[in-house]
Amino acid sequence: MLVTGGTGFLGRRLVERLLGQGRQVTVVGRTPAPDLVGRGVRFVRASLDDAPAVAAACAGIDTVFHVAAKVGVWGDRADFFRTNVLGTRAVLAGCRQHGVGRLVYTSTPSVVYNGQDLAGADESLPLTTSCPSPYPLTKAMAEREVLAANGPSLRTTALRPHLVWGIGDPHLVPRVLARARAGRLRIVGSGRNRVDMVHVENAVDAHLLAEQALDPRPQPGSPGAATGPAAGRAYFITNGEPVVLWEWINALLRALGEPPVERRLSLPVATAVGGVCELLWRVLPLPAEPPLTRFVAAELAKDHWFDLSAARRDLGYAPRVSMAQGTSELVAHLRAGRGGA
Image (cartoon, rainbow, N blue to C red; front, side):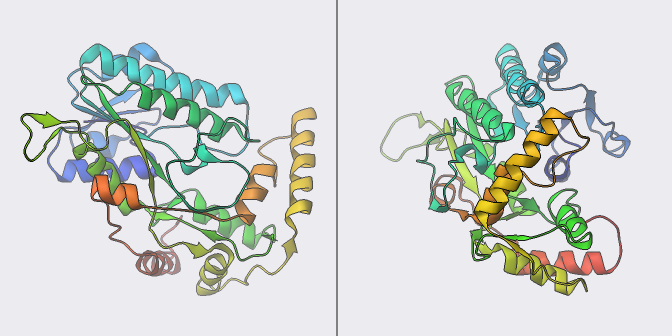
């Protein structure tokens, strides 16, 4: 197995699960992981756009889990393109060069961003071609190329896990907590928008199930084997329990002894503020990222939850860790002061 981004939050959990199954794992990443090497992982230190290094890492590999990406709501489009598009092309080239049979690509639901509420959305939605953030645009480009590469010699699928969280999460929950504690979090819009999330262990389950669903399966009454049900397809992956976003955030804050978020911004005002911030950060330019962008304003105010029917049918996906269980475990971990999320 080859896992790109195997030192990240989701990638590391996937690597640990693969090791637990007794499988041989290679990781491509930029940050050394001595603990994984000590457990028998072959580590290739390389950035995704180092095509020769990525291709060499694919030698002798049966399945590639392409998890690595440049993630964020702000930044230079060229940087996102280099990692998310050129890096994915390097992975595809390595798979073809070395006869890799299966490629599971970690995409994102934001590839179908259209600026509207997404309530019970399914995979029939078209990929975005217009978005105020380069992340969804470049991930959509990469997903399109991954699925187009599907064929008899290389079977490919794309998973779209939404807001991956859990103990050890370095992004979602820590960011919410930091902004709330700094008094910089605002309820945007009505505060009633429903959002899907996915616990990291459920996301790992989906990746392993997707690998299996790329294998040809015999069809009753037909000779030979048919194409694996996931080949050439994309799937939304969530907990299947959409929450009212701001209720969930405030319940988490209360459980941790923090005051709930009460201050509000209307979506039009938040969108205008985000546009001004983007302009200032481009023109000056200012360090770090803007406190608000048009994309973030929309994500905080609108529904984005998804239909899991396809993943249940083709992958056999069934979330094991519920929102209630995962939240309870996370709160206990944070209360114990073990650092991070």
